[in-house]
Amino acid sequence: MTLSVYAQRAWLFGCGLVLFPLGVALAGCWALIFSKILATQLGLTPHSTSYDMWKETPVPMYMEFYLFNWTNGYIFNSSTEKATLARTKPHFEQLGPYVFREHHVRVNLTWNNNATVTFRQIRTWKFVPERSNGTLSDNVTTINTIALAASYMARDKPMLRIFISGILEGLGSVVVTKTSGQLLLEGYEDPILDTLKNFRSLLKNINIPFTKFGWFAERNNSASYDGLFNMYTGTDDLSKLGMMYSWNYEHQSHYYEESCGLVRGTTGEICAPVKDMATLDLFSSDICGSVTLKKVGELEMMGITGNKFEADASIFDNGTLYPSQACYTTGESVYSGVMNISTCKWGAPAFISYPHFYLADSSYLDAVEGLSPSGKDHSFYFVVEPEMGVPLQVRARMQINILLQSIPDITLLKNVPRVFIPCMWFSQNADLDQSLAPTVKNTLLAKWVGSATLFGLSALGVLFLIIGLIITVRENWRDEDTDTLVNTDSTPPASGVKNSPQSDGSPLMSRQDSSPRSSDLGTEPRARDGTS
Image 1 (cartoon, rainbow, N blue to C red):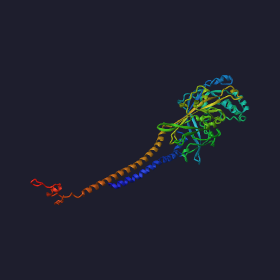
Image 2 (image 1 turned 180 degrees about the horizontal axis):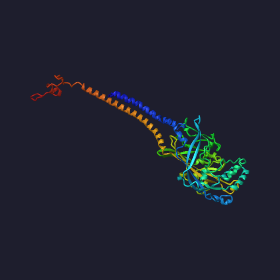
Image 3 (image 1 turned 60 degrees about the horizontal axis):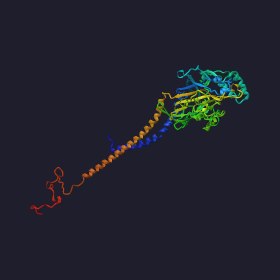
Image 4 (image 1 turned 135 degrees about the vertical axis):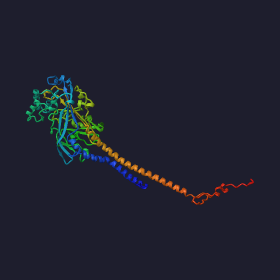
């Protein structure tokens, strides 16, 4: 059945007037609608999409360890003259990387009423020889961290210094040679540790809570080492997703003073959307605190664009250029470029920096030989997809240094210069797995497809209105043409013309009327004789 013109116009205008405002309204609200849908999936609950990915991280992570072999370390002892040591720079060669596959699992979960979850984490490392440059049996000469730690802990106690000096003279040396495996995860026993334990009741100022020393010893498969975490789930506010609420039941840690001790930021495995963020705080139990990364641009990976946040010189500033960092410098006067974490490492003289003293004051690099900082290899950055907060790439790089210095009454250290000895640096690497990339891209595509569909709906409404308008205009023109034709047909004939009805009813002009009349021609008839 064919619709009348009136019905067509009514249908087109009706659909247009409904679709256009509806499409515009929904398109304008789509971003909010999409965010609400996304929040239900990203907010952390036992049944949310993000839960399984957070509880047991599916993204392949690798820890690259680099050790510094101290090639002239054995001349730094009490028998070498002070003048000789003063003009001799410690020389190092970098060994590695020693690559380990890293795996994280969250355990002992407790869901709290304040939209937080309490948990512990187990980190495991497995050596990957095919990715490594070296073996775990490589010999490495490095500073004797146990001897330096005991001396540093006793530095303000005269009687204790004398006691420690006696122990070190018989058992200690400034340097030790161990295998790379012992220095990293296996750990090694040390007679100094055994002696200190035997006198534990007398040495209340010295508390070394481990039986073997290694930079990551006793951490593999430990559920207690990293502490107790409490973080926001984002179920009531997605912007808080993954943000730390407390660590070991504290909102303000005792390791640093003032704002430096605030427990803040994300642990990095799960993040809130960062599209409106200029900075990103990362919390690390390794340093008992947080670092702030700044947005420096964008980086594309596997067709997904992420915001790149990078750590700059402000993190290890001593408060000279960035006053807010001054609270990290308690205990030692240092130039910018290192951070004192001795309180986090049981009182050992441990300081962290970027690898090879990248972005540090030149004095650190000038005091040693063999290091070569590079922004490409030694920077610390984090790339996050801004809409969903999915980590795309992580390069968390830090170096551990031990402060070597002379301490009164400690004979072993009487001639040594004051210098920061680089021991090792690590790069924690994670990249979005290719199997997860399509899921991220499809989720992001859904936002734009939904928006485009709704705008298309409003455009369809406009099209209906335009078509309806065209039909209306054409119909008005047709009506005007019809009126003109009717008026033309009803006009009376000219004067002097008769319509004679014939048998067929057609008006015909009579023969005698077919010749023109003089009156019609407007002239007088001439006389036959030609006279006027």
